[in-house]
Image (cartoon, rainbow, N blue to C red; front, top):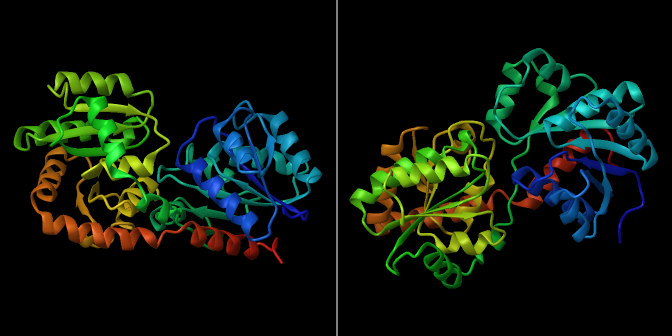
Length: 372
């Protein structure tokens, strides 16, 4: 039964579904399990609002025309008073801007902001103001993001690291054969294919173009290799054209958005994360490790907090497609190495549990005086 006490308002502003929205849902469900009263506010028709409603959570449609929508700031202040909400947790940069607007318009709740990306605050002066004025705590999803925020002038006692969580057991239970068969048929791949996959938003900073470069190199030395790109985004058409020009026609499957990720990971033989920048604590990397897929990833700060030991996976320099191809080939050809990486990766992924994320977020809320 849901709590009837003061609300912990979880504010999202994105219409789509990515890693950040998944974390909001995990957090809200975890808070409810602990007897709290989470309320999810997100744009009408958004994936987060729909999935939160399907999960039986208390939801509120909340629309805003950008982060500097004064009317939306006023509505946020009224919403927080009416629930009443003892705390507003803003999960996007736009939500942080709305909290800044709402402060002088009557928002009296404690405010916690999430920071999930390692990009600098933009614009620098206004960004610092948005993440400082009237803000009680900032939750960074990696130590690397925390260090970046401190370097940009935010107060050390207000920035806390809480790594994002995954349901490791769910990803460990993926069904390999039906999913693999489906990918082989969809891509018209041979039964003996070595499936090398990546999952992510098709945006420039995700480095999918470098993954395709690595695929082109690897295809020349590992004829059985076939490649699967999972995700959607504005770079999709350009990436498909890149694959065609590189002679990868018939070797690359652009699988689009998938909700069956546990099965999809299970179908893969190798996983690659080619991100160039912006990663906080990438869930897809933890998910692949939990699913028992040996991983190669770029050595970004947040990634190195997950693959903190060479036993967990192989790291390559960001942007170095040739190095990624060599690392993938090494794993493909060394069965004992793959087995060691899978075992250590599963153990490491289990450390990033949803319950640990919820518990540590609750501790942040308690530190600002909103939980008994």
